Image (cartoon, rainbow, N blue to C red; front, side, top):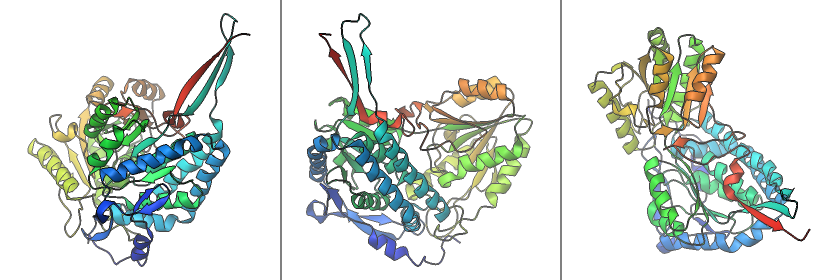
Length: 492
């Protein structure tokens, strides 16, 4: 079944979430009181309507961020950190309601939604601690005639754009370092999942964030509201998580004002399983790397390369695990696989599987749309997927595991690197030397060595090549929101 009994708090959490724009600390309607619908992807039903911002609304939000920047930049770092810490505690306290809200607008099952809320909160806790660790330098000039003073200052008003697949964690991963660094911001959440961000903004207000430091603009026309802000000289920073195609356009637009840009873009993650791997551990890791967030993650394993000697055993075990997953509306505690985000994504996954099968791939399990309402696709394992199949070069963003074989290490590395993307790779081997060798040879910003999940607020997240610029999280995450100023001191 694709539907389950209604959760008793559904109406309550949706009603409690703000539906307006947040500009200069006030909730307000969009120009002309325009709104757009937020859909439950498990049923196709409308959950509610939220404000649909105009370009003028967006510029008003940027103006509020600009007006608040000078005061916020001089706000004591300890107090900036305490605001984030209080927000962290509120998020944890309200985890159940926030998880349910996320499940309703995005579709992921409640246990996964709870996990994301905890993960999202950790970015605030991490950057609360980093706010007081922004350091500089003081040194004697090499010729001894002067001194060098180096300090780091907030870059200024930041534009933040977040995707629908992790509607709260992608927000805290950007908002946390912006606040800690002393930057004001305007954030635009994805059209499909605005409610989690609106709820987060209200939590920050409760935690004591001053008016104008964070402004939220929701819109059904992302380009129409973002481009005027990007081209406005008051903006100094752009942080975007989304597709590579959109990222390229944003780089072009950002060039006009020479914005400091950080981009977390598409992925095409290879998952390598060598013949000496612990097979059960590799299957466990594959389930994590593939099925986290229903496969709708830039870090999701997209191409499975398995040594020919163990490919049959691996595919059989993976198919057994995938076929046993429970599919349905995520508000039920026993559901493991929720719907894809919308009809467009469901059609894409369906087309990618059809293309692979037409080119000779074999369906081991799944391979079709799950019946009933909503945008459900059956967890799928394919073998014999040819290199020419579209899913070998395109992000699947769904619960589909395509398996191809290899015979030696060099071939595995070559196949893994045969993509324009370079976000994350996974590999399983019990040979330490091989693990280090292959890790160094993989053209990705992150590697999971005998591990199916790499994301951690305390570690730098980001890719190379067409997967983006810059890093989020970890010690370097705050750097994206800071500029370095050098002062030369003479007369000594």
